[in-house]
Amino acid sequence: MDFNILHQFADRVLKDFAPHMEHRLRPREVHLLMMIDKEPDKPLRFYARHVGLERGSFTYLTEVMEHRGYVIRKEDTQDRRKKTLELTDLGRQVIQDAKNEMEQHLERVFEPFTDAEREDLKRAMDTIERLLPKLPNPHPRHRRPHRHHPDHRADRRPHPRHEEE
Image 1: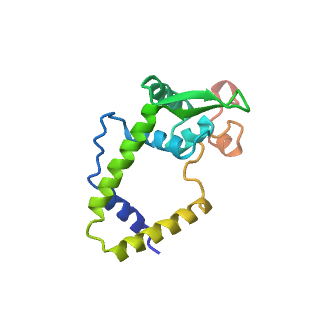
Image 2: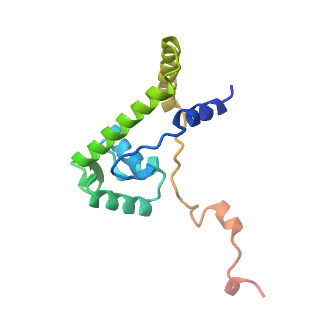
Image 3: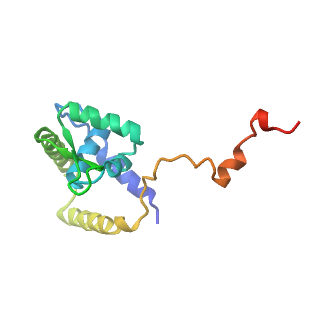
């Protein structure tokens, strides 16, 4: 199987897609809003992992998004130490605008397809969606090796004060 075909397909489908949303959000910001919409009430670390940011960068992103009125941070109802994000009305409007623009774009892209080809594509996408949870998560935790980890210790040079004379 040539999995490169998936990249080629995605590249061609998304070619020339530039949402003209009045909100002027970056792709990562839209991705965050989409994740909150799709997976509500998840802990902040869940969203950070899925948008590919480390904790500090993600905290900054959420502060900006909250300040601009797209999300609100709230405490988990079962555990007050945990925080989650909720879309505001403005955040929901951004998601709806993005979905509408994507739908219009896809209609243009798939216009040359026959009804049978569209049905084939839908079945293929449904199959991929069904199989996706069985694959490893592509967003590993962004952690440095623990300083006492054996692999890490092998790369360390001794401090000059501790070298034997």
